[in-house]
Structure formats: structure tokens, C-alpha cells
Amino acid sequence: MSNRLNLSVTRTNLLRLREELEFAQEGYELLEQKREVLVMEVVALIEELRVWKKEAEESLKKAYRAFEEATLVLGVETVTRASLAIRSAEKIKLVERSIMGVAIPRVSYSRTLCPSHHQYGFQGTSASLDKAVYLFSQSLERLAKLAEIEVSLFRLATELKKTQRRANSLNYLFIPEYRETIKYLENTLEEKEREEFFQLKRAKELHQ
Image 1 (cartoon, rainbow, N blue to C red):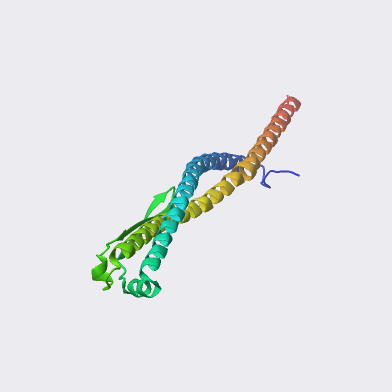
Image 2 (cartoon, helix red, strand yellow):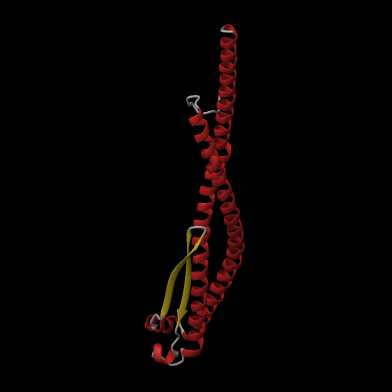
């Protein structure tokens, strides 16, 4: 099956296809450069994801252990009442930056911790609950970073797939079609010019 375009054999079409082929080749090179950058970013994020996932899991384990210790020391009722009295002081700020045209989130998490006797209003809760609250706050910070990495990885991986599809389409479909068509037009026009030349030469010989 022919891989060339169905076009009229004209020099105008030949010149136009040559220009379009050059444009397609430049586009392919740019897509390849973009793909290489995206691959490096994705690989780096996969490693970051592994590190931060481990840190988040360990941080949550410590926080839950501290919570269990506070419950054992103070009792379920006291811890529950104190927990309900805690006022949230988290601040999450989300900004975006661009990598190869892809919007990547940057999440910043902050929390102001108040002394527990001001916050809870119960005696004997400060040391044990402060530790649990502090550790959960650390866990939230790590989870925010983990969410940032996961979203960034998803967006970059999605863009990488799109870029790869476009590059493959140019490299394996459009560029070969253009080259094959250009070759066909060149050969056909060359053959046509030879025939015209011989016809003209023969006509001159007949009139001599």
C-alpha cells in the first residue's frame, strides 16, 4: 500500500510539500527536546515520590503512636474533649509554576501551634497532647508535599504521553508520507521533463 499523499503532480505542490516537510521535521525535533525534558522531570519526581511517601507513612505512624499514648495516659474522654477544643491554625498556600508549558502546583503548609493549656482548657493535657498535635502537624506538612508531587507527576506524565504520541505521529506517519510523496513528485516531474525535452528535440529534427 502506498504511503504517499494523493496530490496532483505539479511543481507548486512539490515546493509546498518541501516547505511543509521542513516544518514537520523542525516540529519533531522540538517535540523530542520537550520529551527528553519531561522524561527527566518524571524520573526525578518518581524518586521524590518514593522518598516523601516513606516519610509521610513514618510520620503518620509516629503521630498515631503519640495519640495512642496520650489516650492511655489521659483517657479516651479527656483526649476526645481536648481534641474537639483544638482550633485549626493551618495555612495552605497553592501557587503554580510551568515546566514545558505544564502547570505544576507548589503547595506550602504552615501551622501556628498555641500552648495546649490555652487551647484545650484541661489540666494534665499539655505534654502528651502537644506531642501528638505537633506530630500530626508534621504529617500534614508531608502529606501536602506528597500531594504536590503526585499531582505534578500525573500532569507531567500525561503531557509526556501526548508529546510522545505527537512525535511518533510525525516521525512514523507524516514525515515518511511527505518524503515518499516528494520523491514521487520529483521522479514524475523529472520523467515528464525528459519526455518534453525529447519531444521538443524530435520536433526540431523533423522541421530541419
